[in-house]
Length: 208
Image (cartoon, rainbow, N blue to C red; front, side, top):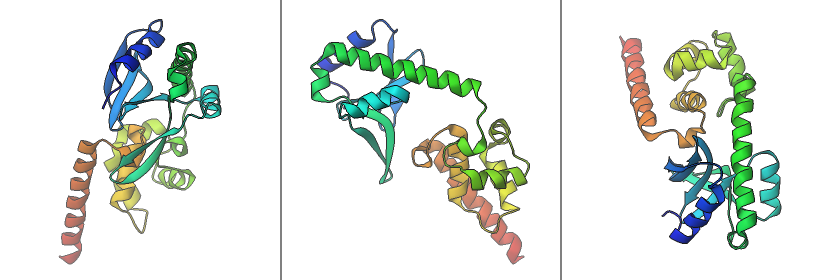
């Protein structure tokens, strides 16, 4: 369920000076974007603003609650904060918060482009997996993205005692830039099928 007509009109008024508002499916709801910048989500008739930097501090102080997205029964807390009733009644403050969400999201995107990420900074990874990737010749984020999750998984498989579908999905999520729980469904199914076939082939090889 999307926002009511009245609330959507309020939101449009708040972003009128920023640009044209567009919608796309996101996290089980509707993502709201301006110039490709995802700054808010609508889910179950509620509006959640993206929290970054100082905006997040203000949202928390206002008593705005975090958005919890359930994927396959797994709750994932995201940095989006629900616009409560008192904020809906204050159009000036609402417009200000919408601008903050957009501006800080924009700044975050620019910072991310300017500062090279380490592997450990990607979703689902961490320092331990980063070191394992180094050992198999993958030391940069761009190298991981070029090789892809399957090749990276196969390299790790040669150096780890145990690998699993969870590792493959974690690598794919890191490349996609998302938590493994919100990996695109089509990609998830393709990887599960590929991994199942790989396990079957390995089983045949060892039994022959």
